Structures are given as C-alpha cells and as structure tokens.
Image (tube, rainbow, N blue to C red):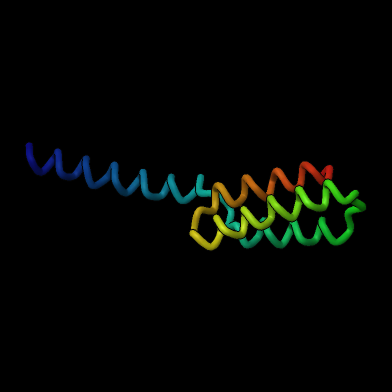
Length: 84
C-alpha cells in the first residue's frame, strides 16, 4: 500500500510540474521588446510618455527580480496607455 501511495504522489508531482510550465508567464524580456517596439512608433503626449516610462521602469525592476508575471503586468499597462 505504501508503494502505491508513493507512486501516486510521484506521478502527481510529475504531472503538476509539467502543467505549471505550460501556464507560466511569458518571459518579461519578450514583453519588454514588444513594448519598446510599440513605443518607438507611438505618438504620445508628454503625460502619456511619462506614464509609459514609469510603468516600463517598474516592469524592468520586476523583470530583474525574476518576477515575470508582475513585470508583464506593468508592460501590459504601458501598452494600454499607448492604445496597443
């Protein structure tokens, strides 16, 4: 019975590890590249430029801390400000 419980536990762990990588946030570096490309073509007023710059700085800070999910959230907010 213990072997069966151990086998089930190991199997569950293997499946959950593979599922978690599927739902992981995209790399923040990729999001930052997309943000900078959109920023290069965007026509923004000074207030929006400042907001985008602020969000980009916060995102880079989180990206450097290996917090891809929060970094991507900041980058997504910046994209919204630019209307992308």
